[in-house]
Image (cartoon, rainbow, N blue to C red):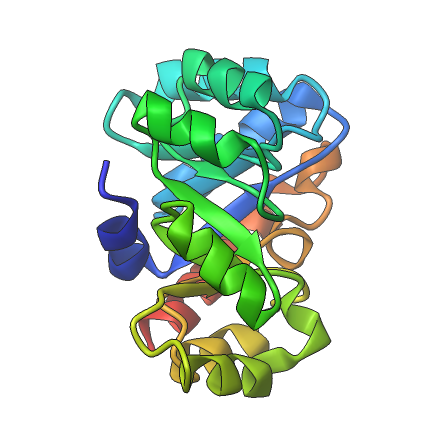
Length: 206
């Protein structure tokens, strides 16, 4: 898949992380049913690889389903075997080199200018600005001055109010976890999740 084009097209990356594998799967499917077409399942979640495997079977081969918090070479291989078509890291990690070997695109975590350069040199398709909450949209604007060609995706503390601000500041997409998922990943209200998904999608489209 072309991760950069997919991020630009959809502008919202949903991040699923929780203690209940079945609830995580239900959340992924509810998001997809609501029109969220770019979803990451964090490997820190319980049973994450099985969730990715089951979600892939349900959503088909063309859906943009990735694995997050991919740190090691083993993480990268296991995520690929489970059906992830892209990887997300919180930092510059050994998984980047393995992802390149596997032919998987990576959204690589970085915060400082030096880390942005490292992520780019390591072949990242885009840079996950993490944790974005430290600097907010203003920090993204400042980073874009020396890195106008870098594709940034802010993650961490991005809510429905901040998401449009990050996009206006030059982000190609935003990554959203708990402000979008709420209690759904713990077996909570899927109808409320669908409503939040529609609100985030509307904000991203605007």
